[in-house]
Image (cartoon, rainbow, N blue to C red; front, side, top):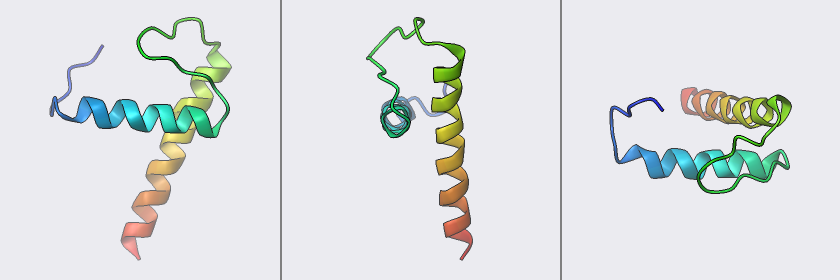
Length: 61
């Protein structure tokens, strides 16, 4: 696991990941999620990136 520059951000990142997983219908659990398929994990990551881009674009307006 990568070291966070801001350790306090861990909880926010975990919450963001859980929200993204819920939006794409992937059932994440706290802790180890090594049983996810590559497709499921990619869907969660893709949703996170999509949300970050949307937030950035809205901030530019």
